[in-house]
Length: 400
Image (cartoon, rainbow, N blue to C red; front, side, top):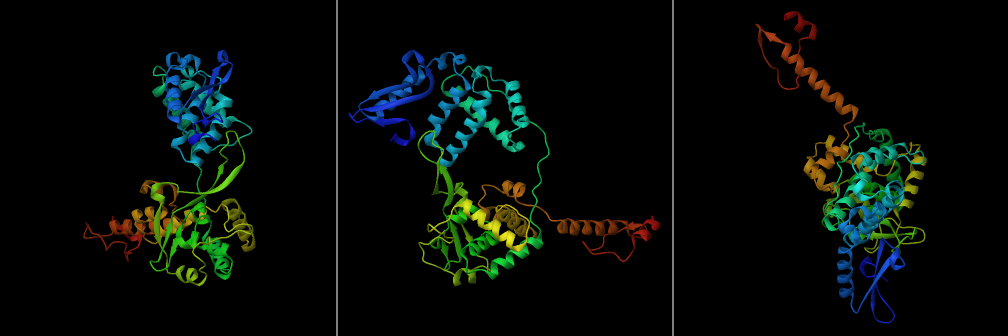
């Protein structure tokens, strides 16, 4: 097995072998370059020295984008989480190499990157959001920046192509749908799936965090739930392997590790259905746990039983955040409950004012305008804030 994903192996004869992939070593007999040594550190040092002498460090014209992408993935792999590497690997294999693989890194300018963005948008077999297209382009620039800093200081990094398109509006489930779902969950608390969904509904945690939640994380004495894990599907470690496995990883970011106070409505439900501390809150039929994909299927079946139009499980998190804001939560506290690194993420992604809230604010605005129009002896005066005036709008206009 390679040590820490660096393509360095210990051979049966006791030596260590390192393999550098991604360059064209046809003069040496293949696309891999093997380097040998007595210890892991010796091989790693030799590999770094060899890379510094690669032709691409002196003449960037030799390096293609597919080769640069492989170098970036292999050399940065140990710095990333397994899920992060899987995402980057998928983007490189699916979009960057097919469209830009044969472009030399010193030929990749603003126009090429812009044409690449257009091709992503026009591709018939794929439908990518504007945000995801921008993300793919940012990965291209990350690769170029890495190659520039380590191997080819002479290459130019193109500016980021900006396409101004209207963002898709997030449509929250209606209050009626959420009320129907809430009633179903409360009536079927003997099913641990319903208890888990109720936790997400009342506390806004992510689906991966819910699947990783055990009863050890629920502290009924301190009245908090501690979020310490995130269940995800990750690609198997073998290079090029398409199979995935389920793993409990650290939460999304450092700020996602948090303790959330249990709301009063949820506390008695948790106390009544409490299990052994090593048990997962939601269990599977074959295992003691359930993965995110299966939970999404179960959630969809519950929506069907309730006669509710389908919406993604993550919308529960949006609905929770919006409800908290409407009840007067301060944004900083809400941001920490959701596990965000800053309040801008909370406000831009998870707060969606309802039509009722908008109407209430507009009604207050009308009252304010009316108070300005009202005069006594041609001297303007203000009625108490948000208090409706006894004078009609028509009378105000006639007095002007």
